[in-house]
Image 1 (cartoon, rainbow, N blue to C red):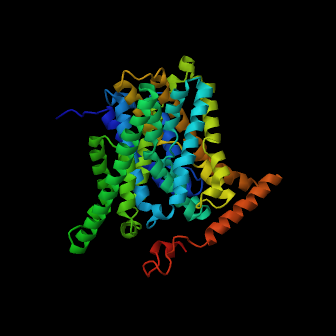
Image 2 (cartoon, rainbow, N blue to C red):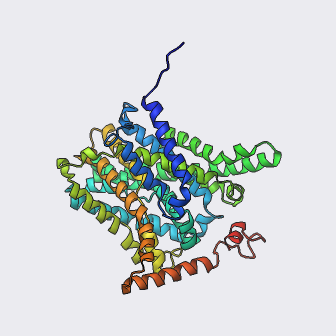
Image 3 (cartoon, rainbow, N blue to C red):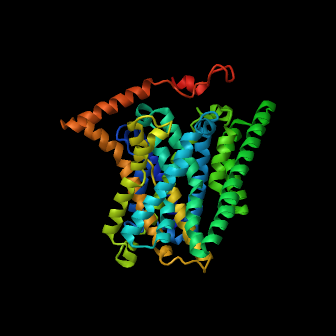
Length: 472
């Protein structure tokens, strides 16, 4: 009789930990999401910290690979690629063309201000040079599609947030992830080259090769995929399972191709998602399947369990001026001033953000997440690959600072809605709270009754948009 062998390695423990968490949270998902309004990302991060090496030590990602940073970057890369593909596919017909004014405002001047404000906080709190602060600030300039999905989906969002606002925030989070490269490489090139050479390299290497080429590749790939799927379905060549997974397989293909070419794979996937559903055909075909929501839950939960386990708590010491109080102050300042003030001031220039209540929601819910981790590791990678770069201590502090900001965003954005609703239920008699309630109810009532701007005009294609009819 053979011996019974019990395997207790990470390869056996980690699937059990992640699968067990997903199963237990899934069993009470209606309670956590629709009654307590707690997102999976918040619960997953806390769970990752508990089972990670600093508490129970059941899960230690540092031992999974000889290069744990590369593992982190590739995990975040594929999570982002699939999420921005889903974001592109979820948008209504020709959405980017229709809302180009709002997107241009959010992706150019407002994102630039978010970058500069974040850099100023880093410079002030951690006493870095201006270029070093710009490099670190670039990592948190984009809003995160993984965390944004957790905020923009569900009962609360559907009941209280206008569809146009959800759409514009989804489009912003999908597009600006890929646009983090110009902000990051602007600082990195200035560390390596003279000003003239840095600007020239930044224009042709970043804007032309990485950004423009990735948009072209993604748009063409999405168009070809859409036409191919339409032909294959009409010919009876493709089954339902393959059809539903086509957007995900397209994202994986584009990540591989863009990585080989050295261009922007994240932006490419978003462009492909938009092109794939440009005429609304693909989105309508898959919208009732639940595939995208399932993928979103699995991706976000898995990544943030991993993130909780790799939190570099040991780095938050007096070394490199990463005192815990400095980190805490930086989190508060970035959360308050990175995005909210500029959105509140400029919302009248953003057609999709119509009221101050819209601006308040859009300004606060601009989360920092997976994309920030990706760019932090990219910063370290660029510093390691170019010995001539004058990086100073950026390579030592960028990852712990970014992880702290991501952790702060997960916690603060994850508890905002429960706290707001808790305050509402407590029935406080403060005058400003009563005023806020009235404004919030008015906004919610208008959200449920306002006409859907995605309805087609009579002279479009002759038939109304099916999503607009359902939304009514």
